[in-house]
Structure formats: C-alpha cells, structure tokens
Amino acid sequence: MKAIDKALQILSKFGDIEDLGIIGNYNGTWEWSSKQWMRQTKQAALICVDELEKSEGETLGYSAHYSSEWWQEVKQEILKQ
View 1 (cartoon, rainbow, N blue to C red):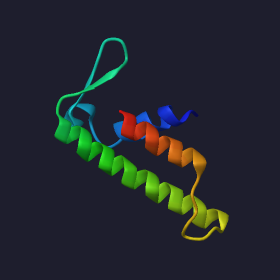
View 2 (cartoon, rainbow, N blue to C red):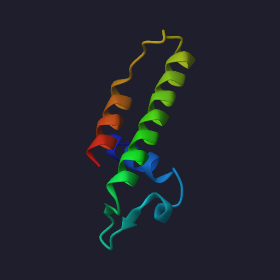
View 3 (cartoon, rainbow, N blue to C red):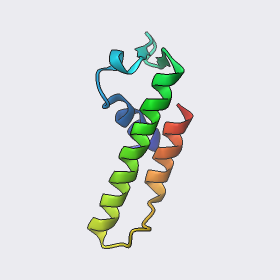
View 4 (cartoon, rainbow, N blue to C red):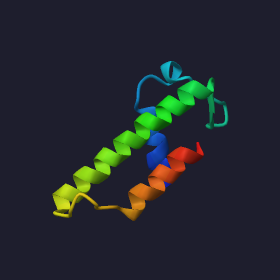
C-alpha cells in the first residue's frame, strides 16, 4: 500500500465522513468543510500513526526511538492533505 493511501485510510476512519467535516467530491477527491476539522483530524491521525509506529518498534524488539521510513512517509502525506 502506498503511503498516501494509508494516510487517507487513517484520516477517514476517525468517524463518519460527514461528522469529520469532509465532503466527498464526485471525482473521488475530498474537500474539508472547515480548517478546524482538518487540524483536529490531522492531529488525531498523527497520534494514531505515532502509536502504530511505536507498537511496530516494540513488536520488532527495537528501542523507544524506533522510526520507520514508511510511517514517516504516511505522516507527511497526512500533513499534505
């Protein structure tokens, strides 16, 4: 899975699309209905990615400073949205 696809998947899973303030366009793109919703959703998604990355590091037996290049790409894609 590409980082952008995972970023969009995580963003969309924080609740019903309408409740998040995201409007689906006819061409498959998303549009934010408010900047506050966008900020809050991105913050929540970034926390989620941090926790997933931490859990992955623990599972692999790495220290608390484990950093996955792929999860870092996902974070960058979330920030771009």
